[in-house]
Amino acid sequence: MVGRNVKRIRLKQGLTQEEFAEVSGFSQQYISDLERGLRNPTVITLFELASALRTTPSELVRPSGR
Image (cartoon, rainbow, N blue to C red; front, side, top):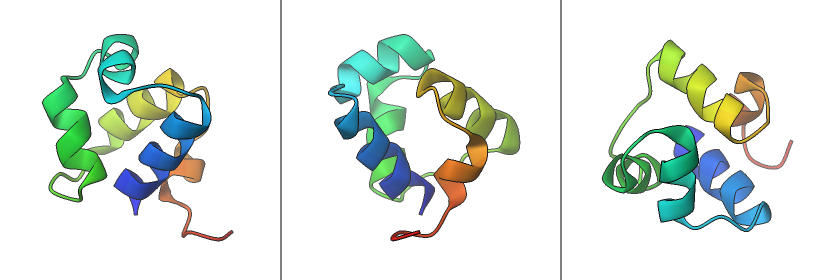
């Protein structure tokens, strides 16, 4: 769920994985794995991802369609 939301918000902002990796400080591989559901972020990582996307952590854990 987090990965889908990260991807949705990232694309809405017109960012590639590479651009988002640069802004967030995470590797492009980590972003790719996260978006494909292969990684689960820690609470701290969730806050850092939300900050980089200029959104709230709750937006990243919200079920799709809400």
